[in-house]
Image (cartoon, rainbow, N blue to C red):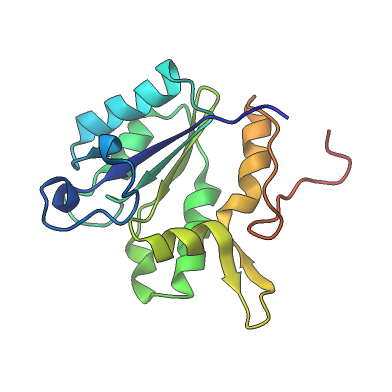
Length: 176
């Protein structure tokens, strides 16, 4: 099994300016950047083109507010759009909050890298990645992470697996 290289980017004007502490990626202060589209685009390009990350996860800056430009920056650097990721993140989030329809999260491919815009709050990140579970722990609505390993395989990245107790990897039968 190969190693997978993942880039993480936290986007938040308020956290960047010290209004509140970032909750998306608190340990990654070096990647905390403001909602500046040029800076977000440059960071995504650096992580994919220079650092050769197989996957880049952003958190924050996906709402309808004028300065929420993470999806715009992500789309500007994309080679291909993967609309199912944004659709599924909104579907999962709608089980928890009615304002999920305001999210503009996207998933895209740049070169051989998958870029996903995640929400900015830890609870919402866990929900969109892991999905909706019933009272017994059975998955009712799949989170997006179940599809990530196959997507990374398909775009030329390494073969990866997930821990089945966190997120079950889905691959079609007889997939090599």
